[in-house]
Image (cartoon, rainbow, N blue to C red):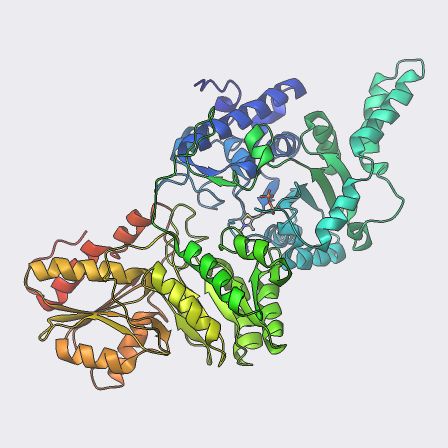
Length: 636
Ligand SMILES: Cc1ncc(C[n+]2csc(CCOP(=O)(O)OP(=O)(O)O)c2C)c(N)n1
């Protein structure tokens, strides 16, 4: 494989692009695309979105003066070209590996990552903040936000467009319009953008004007070029004002987001314009890699693959929690036509695609609009429908007030399915579901569950389908479950934990919730080898917590330990401790195994769990340290 990156290897800062000719910049773009393909094929990561932003990034970075000019990328999954043009080529083999480059944007990774990202819809607000900070401090740098057509439809983006349209400070927004979210983009705004796309493109207008001028005899090439610059922003079609113009933005576009010479023209102009400027660039997700262009959803986020054969080597796994949910919601919907399903732009990721195919009239994709999705579900429930609202734990953070104020306060039976709860792995801190137990379990009326494995996931889904007394939420991890747990299982009952084993004279009671139950079980088996008898409880319900079972088992053991994949504050362990204290058992030796009070970095799930002490060894170590405090324990 050819790793000779003639230009890229010398680019440390975007300003290094300023000395290159337009022809050389084209070569840079080719190198950036090749670097993305070669590296991502080895490391895995986001592919198709990044192939779509190559020319846009080269053009912006070759025309703005970065730093001090600033580019804020929305979400950050399409910012690999940005990373490559800001001196990170050498570190690309470490992409998404523990201690290596983040797959998103991080302020402490590089000075040009001016605003961290991972969640969609934040770029325009953040860029406006940076622009207003500049105005307050009296500096002169330019600020640009780049947002995709799905991210720009999110509520926050519109709140920021609205605000900036009034403030009228110098700020540019580049809409990277590839018509795709992860799946095809949805919503009326998408249809509107399609209308704008059907207007004559700036390239065509500029080209026509240029050839008209060139037909006039005389020494005109320079004049023609100058006019073409002007044309790209002054001769935008003016049949009707775009929605962006109506709210105070100068609209420039549509423009081919892969035509580097024209992009260079446009951005050279844009950099000089005052006020809010909106550039509408049309791009192709997966550009330059045929299979990714043809199926950008499949190639959105990839594991390592073979560049020539396109083969992705996926290891065979047990069924995932996502699959268990996806199959069971379909099963429930067959027998209950009041069930509808809601996703916020993640039909595949949440496992709802099949539901969408089978029940298109009962399936709603709101786009990247978690807040709306939650209150929409509340409205559906108020109207007598049974909404199943599936949103990743990390993105559910967006819908907090909607859950509290619109769902729980009114005690509406919305069912929430929070995939990717706990440590997600390579996506890192923006995507870990580390907080949902904390931010949900204190809300009155809400019932919160967590399954021990995929079979229990299905059972909990069925149980939730029949539970109409109030809102319910279930949190479950990325991936599949261990098959180490005993197959025998008790039925799900509101507020009832499951006792997996209860020896006559236990030395310790291990109380685990959700993804941690299997580790607790395996740790108990290890401890038994050392003569330590363990009761093991699968908590099942974070709320209402099974106080009776927990108190009974803990008082038998006299020592207890809790395990969860959530931060300590407000977590399951604290609830166990509170319930024991309320039953005069607060004095017993205990330890709460939780995620740390820190944002956990990226790395494989197994490595991160182990570094947080949430693996079998961690449990064994902790149990030994509380029941035999005098023996020397080697801490990791
Ligand atoms: C708040 C939030 N919800 C959902 C996601 C998951 N997500 C990551 S990228 C993406 C699609 C983004 O599409 P778009 O903004 O058009 O950018 P593109 O990938 O097409 O360039 C989604 C839904 C997210 N990152 N943040």
